[in-house]
Length: 121
Image (cartoon, rainbow, N blue to C red):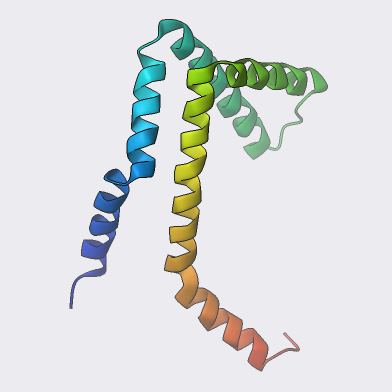
């Protein structure tokens, strides 16, 4: 029987060779090769990271920060190459989420069955 880690590495290879990842990589390389698009994208990513860090630290996000983030998102969405990159990223995220659901199915079934047997808990 194959080691579970061998299957995980096989899955990694499958993701790397998937149409979704290939399209994402091409879109990413296109954005990175355009200095203007790269700068806009880097600004967008930094804005995301800053807001996520504040949330994780339990800090309040001001209305001004929310408005600034909204403007950054609107700007990058108007850039055709960045917009395509974001679409491709979403496609790959969908695939990864679906794979994650498949992988965690044994746990869901195990705990799901237990909770059905003991409905008081």
